Length: 382
Image (cartoon, rainbow, N blue to C red; front, side, top):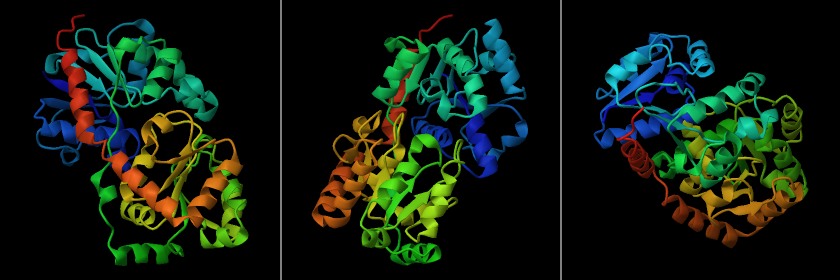
């Protein structure tokens, strides 16, 4: 079976030097599928200039469709006609996997689409205006795929409800964790990173984009509820770039820094992030909505206790290895932070639980389950 693998988001990330979210998923899945000796072609919808040979392994053939993707997709979805240029795909592949929400309508080969979550439909107020305008087209695109892959049972339930897709057409494949998160960072590197940012070990840490659903304002409010001495001893470090809707949160971030009880780091390297994870007291991640919650697993791998939400996908992913709180109650978040700051035995217990839990996830397992989905489509006919 010859698989066409959508790589538009990944190649854009490689060019910009910022690979996250869907790009990480695409790259990690491709790397593990390489080990299964699957015949693959990576497909880019857009400029061939973003498709340099260094981006992919020599085993990948490349198919570049130099089409304005949005216009071509709109035409295909609105008319129910095949995606323009799809004959090139039909001539070269037996199945197309759209891992990045670029979901073409193809006429003679099956399409498997990865839909991470239903956020644009469940909470349109949390996404950009362009994505809000796109959400109904996105729903129709997803419905046109023969099979959907998603990343948690919680997301599956939301997709069934909001996309109107039957459960039988949706497979769940959990994400994995980059092994680099569990590799100890050398002491001299950790010390250099902390010195660079004026930190001492034992701070509270948040990792994620600055946007409303990540609940950063309540994290800062919860930290301010801690005893003043604890705020100073365990400052709140926010690591993340600005996302949509971040304007209202920026004054809170600036005030946190002005009080001397925290830092906002909007652009750290992977090495710096790993050093911060291995130097913190706990991850504070009470997100309002997650389709999976990868920072929770990454923190488990780094040996960091986790405070997170008792809602959406987090209880499914954490499975008793994190302290779960109501993300809408700053008092609960603050109480969990204070417990972990004061109780070394509790922190050690949470670290051990997290390490056991993260061992149940891997990109290799994700790839094997994805291959099962491909093979289930082998007999598909239009």
